[in-house]
Image 1 (cartoon, rainbow, N blue to C red):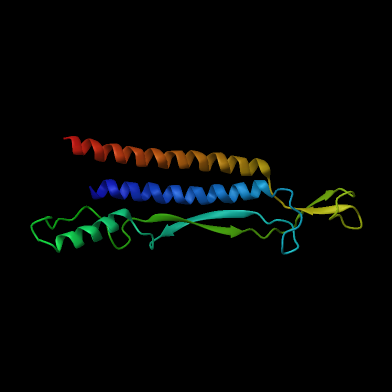
Image 2: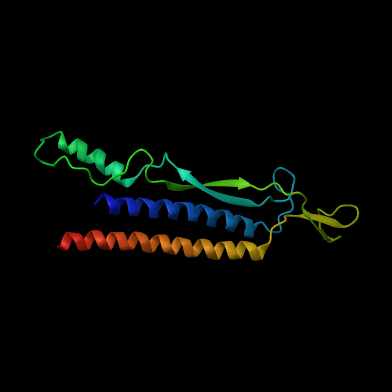
Length: 164
């Protein structure tokens, strides 16, 4: 059963990471024309970086803790077998870290009627490529859907194994 729980852990970590990426992308799209932030500058693009997460709490670890607590009541209740869990970083789950991208320069747009225009009529705008953001959003959505399918498949395998 540990293998199925590991699959669920990996899928859940992927879901969480893709959700963080989709949140950053939606912030970028929503602020594509934000010329002033609380810092006084145009909005700066957010980018999510995926990395290995060894501190992530896995489902199988929670299950092992509950089995340990139950096994203390009577040694014959639960046989002392390994659940296929892999400990000490053998499974690398993913986590997402959001970075603010410092632009080399903001995009300059000529709009003398804009309240944030300089003396020459140019406005500093965020340097966000809306098409690239939409492509990233579509890829993240597909990865999210794939993670959901993995979790559903693992769940179905576990349910089918109980029917045997």
